[in-house]
Length: 207
Length: 120
Image 1: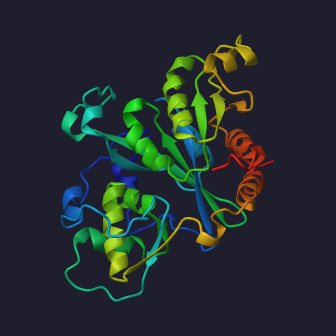
Image 2 (image 1 turned 90 degrees about the horizontal axis):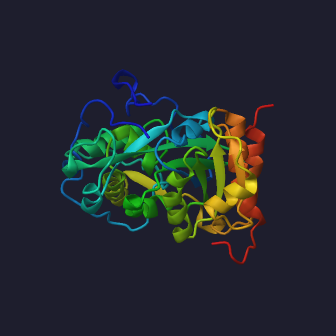
């Protein structure tokens, strides 16, 4: 998933990254979830540009409880935030930001979530509890959201819908879907579950 | 998540802005759209400012895209871009035109656009 140095995009030779002239509104949706749940896979499956990432610095406080694999230096802890882009017919450009959900990313979370339409929370049904933290952050931020179970091949099939909803403590109106993050249409369907939910919400409570 | 890109960035983040740490205008968001302003480049611009202007040669970019291309933190690009906007070297516009901020049709257009993208 990491960029090879030789193929990293460079400012002097843009690989079609510039915004189309038709771009009018730029909006964003958070693709939130724990490490390894498939955020980048989902973004990659639908993005028109190869997913890019920014290096974000974590606060000192968070560095002390750092458990990021591969990040050793406590004084320069960064996390890579992946994002992708879809230019939709009609002039809207939709950005997807892969957002980790741990409490220690709260300041970063608030910055990225600012102005977002909503969040698609990815859950791995083999480790549901890994998504509790991100659900807490989403709910505290007031961001409307939908839940998508990323359909891993070895995921358990015996969970019932109500059982899963109860385990995640979802409100009755919160959409819950299953998707294959590797498949573009499946990922778009999950995004549509969120956007249709946003449309159907009472306008009075909309932000 | 991806790992750190191989190789160090061209300019350390703390040097890229010439020591300025706060953007001179408040509303530089991740999705603020940056484009060249058309003024001729003065001499003496820091390397990171020149890199940002170079990145905008072919068209407009969101702040977050410029940050990814230049391998600089978003916060540094906010500061850089705001300075260049002050010098009329860069134009910045809000992600959503102010008149459409509360457009009730926006979500519907997102949904319609997503459905149109689905491959049969």
